[in-house]
Image (cartoon, rainbow, N blue to C red):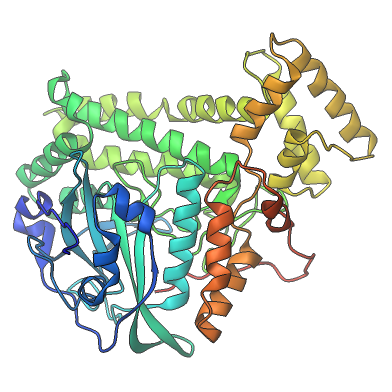
Length: 480
């Protein structure tokens, strides 16, 4: 049985300066750690063939499947506010797989060796960060948040050197595409207007085909990408997700979450929450994510200026009119989501104040973000402090003004408040078991309870427990 790969590589037909053609660097002894069988089925692939020796060889970069055209993508980006030339430094795009229902997805190997864009790196990845991406990206998918997916993780039989020797690994990432804001910045800064236009036309055709008939299709592209990002970041905020490294090269044109390096989920509610070890100034803190998304969209708009209008002043005016809408657009998505979390199906002028008061109380009383909404959803509000009880009374009065039964209110909340998130300490337990002891059963159990986060099962109750208090803040690392 073959795996049923069906490659048709449209990105490889762009001008050559957008990529470098090269194969992954072979590894010595690849072994499958985890295969996403449900995703394989969605893609029309045969899981048994993917799990055999030939399938594992593809995931390791030792074998190129028929029809693939391996390449490393070129792009640039603002990293912590500073512009740099970047590119796939440790990733190879095998090509684009077209599913039986016509969906086109990128198949990328992450950790597959050096490329011309490696900037001195070894092009490899360690097992821990690759498993982290697998777990978090699949959890995000279950939370109904647009995201790249993880098809498989294999070990390479080789070590990578970071602070110490670690087992090497390669992750197979599935994405709507790997087009980034940074891809457009690269074209605008280093390539011709014709090449920039070719990229924009490609993005429209692949992701926003309705724009082909818009009066100004490049303005349409800007508007659609902005909407996607506003909605995406609102969804992050609603579940307490902290991306950790919102550089422009990590903002996709498709509106998917990408790059799960120093990401984590917030426990105690605090807008200043930062997990990344390198974000010493808090640029990408939880509370800053909406503002950074707007900043990144402005950089995208800058890259499109030559296409928006032949006169630069008019192009700037058109771009400014669009990006000025971002704060209102984001708040609309966020407020809509917050109403759903509180069981509100109608809109009242005081809703934003009610929500703000709850968040303020969560901050001042150091309440767990996810479990506060979980307690409301299960009608287990047992806080005895007067101001928390007063807020609960006002909320009860608010939901009573709706034409909904109490059961309908709580069902709405249940669908919008996860019972569990991938708690950071739980993820660390998985990584320690897998990396230090070769035990994948801890990961299997966590993935199972995360697969339906709104189920509110008995098994999930144990995984909903927050970590023990600690004086040491949780820190994550980008895994490069």
